[in-house]
Image (cartoon, rainbow, N blue to C red; front, side, top):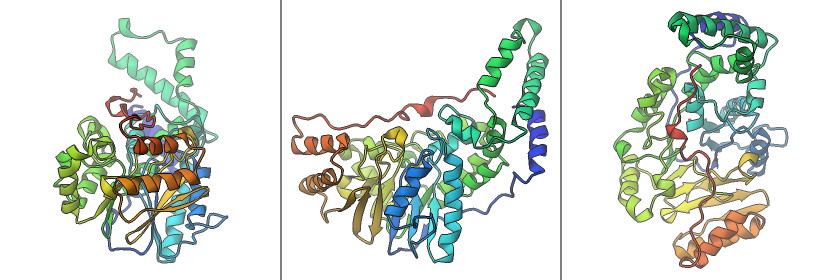
Length: 398
């Protein structure tokens, strides 16, 4: 979308109040709380998000806050893969306001899919997510953008390199940009409402002795403070022109790092200890890496993986985590499992066996138990994760 076309459409949309003022920077460091509920990646599955929040006692049947002083931490990746990203975001914003009135809080972190939407990687945007932005003027906006695109191509390329501007060219162009696409882009790009809400959110927060983020932190960022991490992420979300070389795409950055989730524990041990010491915490809680239905402890419980694959896209594996001091509880659709106090080999077997009893239909959980019981005979379980190589992909030029 070139600058002139963006100005034309943004001017029209601003007339009905779509653009908002820049929000203040978020607080990222909180004292210990009696009850923290942690929700992993949502990926546009509004219904499943609502369901697990009710099961965890955060909301009532009508979606109203009933958590009192609870702090809810959502670990990022609200959008993509499912159709109701916009509703999920609006719901959590409203819930946050209600929580504050009751002495609680809702913290929605930035994930890699928020960043991808900001810098234009739309490969995983569900058609329903575009439809949610559709207005009665959507087709007109697309016509304006199309004409501007044609003019731009003609003005910036020799005639022999022009495509054939016929009906088929226009059909293919429109096919890749459904009604709502323009409004979606304007909302997610710098200056838009969604961008500014995302930009007001932290990438990393600390609550007492717990550190929360979407992906993890690699050695390159081990000495960074909370303030510096969140400031640099925010600056790049607000101005993503150079996103390819920014923290938004760095393999060791907080939106993408998988070493704590998938790396060899012995090899990562010193790095983990350095991170815990740097931030003065006893555990790190992560999303991003799908576990296949289980809140998965690593490093003896010093790292907890909470992206269970909640959305139907990932198999409808519903669970969340409750932290009450040193008491950890995995909340599932069919029951709750309290973590053993000691998560050594036997503690892990006891925990996974208890989760398997609560969720007997989930094959990944059964496979994890089998691998723990027979470590030399059964290959380690790795659940499918389509995001593994997405960091290297560039969005299509618009």
